[in-house]
Every structure is written in C-alpha cells, then in structure tokens.
Length: 328
Image 1 (tube, rainbow, N blue to C red):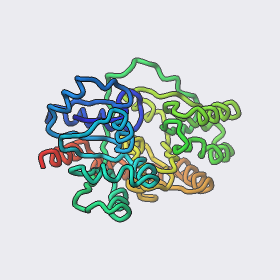
Image 2 (cartoon, one colour; image 1 turned 120 degrees about the vertical axis):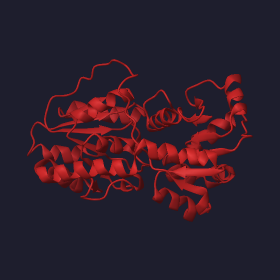
Image 3 (tube, rainbow, N blue to C red; image 1 turned 180 degrees about the vertical axis):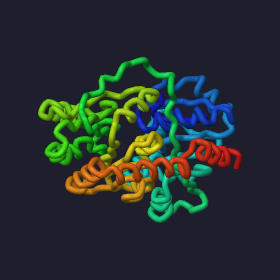
C-alpha cells in the first residue's frame, strides 16, 4: 500500500508516486492512495488490511491527514521524506512528527545531507535511515493531448516549479533583465501549478511588466519532455529542496542546469562540473551569461549532467533499493 499526498496534480510528490508505481508494478502488487485527493473509504481500509508493507511519502502531510480519521497503522511501514517535511515540518514541530518516524521500520531520504539531519539533529539511528536517490521517469504517453503554446525567443530559460513561496520563482527576474543587454530576445518561462494565490498574483503582475516573462499552469508529466527540449537552460530557484526531479529530468535530456544552493540541489550538482550553483542575483547572472556565451562550458555541463544520471539516478537502481527494503 503506497500513500502519497498527490497523484493527479503535477507536483513533486505526484511525480515520485507515479515513477515508483511504474517501476514497482512489475515486481509487487501495489495499491496507490492519494490521501489529499481521494476519498478515504472501506476499500482503502481493505487495501491496508491486505498489505504486507505500507509505504508513506511525505510524513508530515500524512500525520496531519491520518489524525482527521483517527487512523492507526497495524502493518509495518516505511517512510520516504521528500525534503519539505524534514526541512520545515520536523524542524518546526519535532514532538509532533518524530514519534511517527521512530515507529517506522525504515526511513528513506534522497540525499546524504537529509540523512545527516535526521541522524545528527533528530537522533534517528544511522542504520535505520537509507539514502535512495531519485531517478527519472518521463512517460511518452498517457497524459492530455494539449498543445503547448511555447513562447518565441532565444535563448529560452525554463523554471518548472509550482507557485509556492518556498520556490521563489521570481528570484531570477532581476538577473534575466540584466541579461537582456546581451540577449535581447531572451525568454523566461515558469511552468507549474498555482498553489498559492499571493504568489500567483505576484507572477501575474510580473508578466504584465515584462514581455520576456511567461507563466503557464501545470502540464501533464508526459508533456514535460517537450518543455525541456524547448529550453536552453533549466533553473531551480527554490529556497529549500529535497531533491528536485526537474533538475534530474533536465540532465537526462541533455540540458544544462543552474540551481540555487540548498541541500537538495547540492546533492546533485557539482559546481562547474555538471551544473552551476548560485546564492545571489549576481551569481545567477554570471552563471547564465557563462553558460549561454561559452559553447565549451555548455557542452561540458550537458555531458557531465547526463553522466550523473547514468551513474547515480537510474530507475533500476531506485526500484531495486526499495525492493530490498520491502523484502528486509
């Protein structure tokens, strides 16, 4: 039984859930329940009773949801943390969430940094926390047949992110405005679900002020490949991250990535090797200009980015790691 907060709305947790369902379905009988989107009824209870193992994605949301139904777990369970629940929820309310983690048979995280936080800051046993990096899954079909209205221009900068304060999607605007001096036809496209009305209003106002900035609501996972192929560079401006699938997806399709310094991005990107990391507007500007102006730098980042996926982020590696845990 696999619990995920989201499956239908195209968010990070939904991407993870769909990828694991795809990879695991040939090996185990898996029932996926999106607890923020679907009705909790007798069929869900029956699936829980039939399960040998329960696997929970995003423990903070699950704990909050389960309290509403006075739900207790009678089967062994594994918890996978996406990052926000460790970086924010656990840090802010340790007493609420830590007991749930301690009772789990195992906790999985995407990076060594996340494991270190759980072990050093929250006292979990080292052998109890497992690092399983994310992989890439971009289905060719199965989504909507929508046609993307991609903006004209060159170069094209893509930021795939839901509109939430933690994603800080407008951070790049100052740097891109400065880049217009050298690249007058530059285009910046933000793509993601509208998850916060205040952020949406800020983005909407910014698109009115800047002709080079576009916002598009979420697209189906099967359409993402077309977006990446359109882009010259893929950005991540998040204040904090677990491990962004957008960066991995971009690397797998041969696109250079530039990302803000945080534990999730730093778990993937080696500065100037397989991507660029920034902290300030000026650093982002310099990184963008370097990648767009120097063909050799562009090609090195693309080559090493793809190699990162092949070596550390294949779906076979990820699925085998979870199967090993289930069997154990």
